[in-house]
Each structure stands twice: as structure tokens, then as C-alpha cells.
Amino acid sequence: MSVTESTESTASPPAGRTLACVLMAMNVFMTVGIVIANKTLFTMYNFYFAPTLLLTLHQATCSLGAHISDSSRNKSEANKAPAVFIAAIVLTRTASNALANLSLKFNTVGTYQLLKMLNIPFVFVGEWIFLNQPLKVSIAITLTVLCAGVGIATVGDISFSIVGTIFGCTSPVAAAANALLVKHVQSAYKLKGNELLKSITPWIVLTQIGLIFVTDDITQLPHWLETETTGILVLALSCLLAWGLEWSYVSVVDCTSAMTMQVLGHVKTVWIIVTGYLLFASPLSTRTAYGMSLAMAAVGLYTYLKNASAATKVAEDNAGESAALTKNDTLCEFAEDPKKIVA
Image (cartoon, rainbow, N blue to C red; front, top):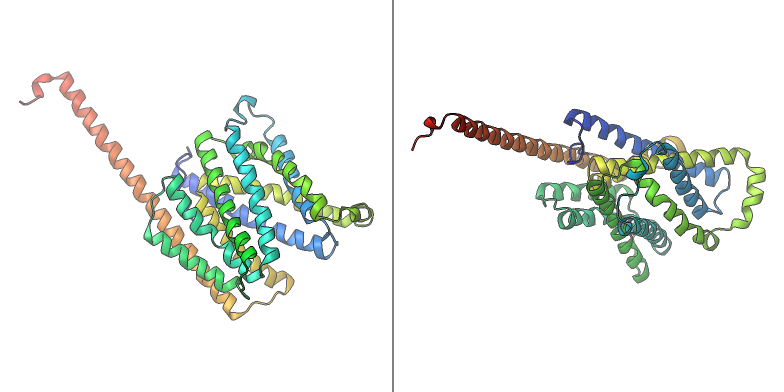
């Protein structure tokens, strides 16, 4: 992925690339880790009765961790973004999660995966409209190949219904809006990592608490807490990984772009498939392997194109600065010795 896109970073390009690479690697690691932890929690320790409670605990841990980690910062620096943007981030995040679950409920897994890939074109167009990013044919073709590769690797049975299609199409809209809002708030108001999490996670927790009693069988929780001591430790690990995942997510978006975060999401999909094959003996067909190879090749090409574009922009900016300095030096020279000005 591109690691030189952020115009807000004050770090030098090599340092910025290193930081972005570390953050992206951390995000992939946290994603794979939380998938393993949650799968273990649901299958080995029977926590299947409370999926919404699990998500709520994840966000509560993020909120607590962000407040503790950011407690030493200047309080006047927090919550600088207007409330309307914070509310929009919270609502789009909640809507995205809810609509994704409804899409999975009313669609087959294959249809769910297929419609989920709409995130990429929605973010691509959204960056052009709202963030003034140029539309490049080479990037568009690369992203198309990436989606094709992921589709080949993950999409199986496909069938459409009116209700399922509506949920499947609106979920990517909400997810794309959330990614674009996060990028805008970070760029415009300089809200970094834990600062942003402090602002949004408490409200996400509040929006999800009410859903627990609708979607979860909470009556099983007391017995589970009494009998699953090791399960409680796995639950705690899942929550800590969720904090790391959320922090790395907003940090990657800040260092790169909303689109790069979407591309990284497909990289995580590939790694989750590989992890399932290696650790849980999940089947890996030839078609899946071909799709993953195609997707990773597209990721490599995307990285090359974005970094080449960033290098060209830096060279143009440096050339512009050099021309401006030369012009200023000439004017200063004329000002010191007016006789040098030739009529």
C-alpha cells in the first residue's frame, strides 16, 4: 500500500514510510489476532449467545484505553472537531455494522462478500468528490483487478433478494462515509489516534447497549461467567486486540488515505484465509489460491502507483520551491544594486 500519501505529517518521507508500514502491519496482525480470539471464544468457550455484547465490550475497552493513554495530553487539545462531525462518524460506524449484519442475515455469504466490495468504488468516488483527490485510470484498473481477485478467492454461492440487496448496498455506503469522515476530521482538526477514539467510542458504546437486549440472549451470561474462567481471559484478550485494531485503523487512515485503508482491508481478508488454512484446517481450493495471488499482485501494483505519484508530487513541489527561491534571490539582488536592472 501507499505509505506517502498524508500531507499532514511532519515526519520526513523515509520516517513517514516506516511509520505507515509499521501501523499497517500492526493493523493486519490485530485483525488476524482478533479473528482467532473471537473464533476461539465462540466455538471453544460458547460465547455465541452475545455477539453484540462482545462488540460493545470492544468499544468500551477502546474508550477506556484511549482515555488512559491520552490522559497526560493538554485537555484543551481534545475534542476540537465540531460535534456534528463526531456524531456523523458515530452514526456511520453504527449504521455500517448494523447494515453489514443485516446484509449477512438476508444474503448468502457469497452475495454478502460480493456487495461488501462496493466499499472500494464508493471510497474512490468519495475521495474525488469530497477530498479533491484526482481520478486516475491506472488506479481504477488496479482496484478493479484487486476486487476481482478477492471475489475469486471468497465469493461462492450468489443469489439476490430485494431486501438483502438493499442492506448489502447501503452497508458499503455507510462504511465509505465513515472512512471519509475519519480522514477529513483527522486532516482538518489534527485529531490523532487516541484523541479521536476518546471522542467517538463512548457514543458508539451507548448506541450499541440498547441492541444487546434485542440481539443477544443475555440470560446466559451469569452462568457463563461462573463456568468459563479461561473464556474470560480470551474475552479480555479479544478486547485488548480490538483497542489495538481501532487505534491502528485511525492511525493508518491518518498516515495514508481512506482508500489505502480499504485496500489494506482486502489484504487482511487474504491473511484471514491463510490463517484459517494454517491454524484451523479450513479448505483452500485452487480457485481461492489463484484469487489471493491476483489480489496481492494488484496490491503490489497499487503500492507502486501511489508511491510513484507521491514521489512525482514531491519532485514538483521541490522544483516549485527552488524556482521561487531563485526568483526571490534575483529580486533581492536587484534591490541591493538597482544599476543591474537592464531597461
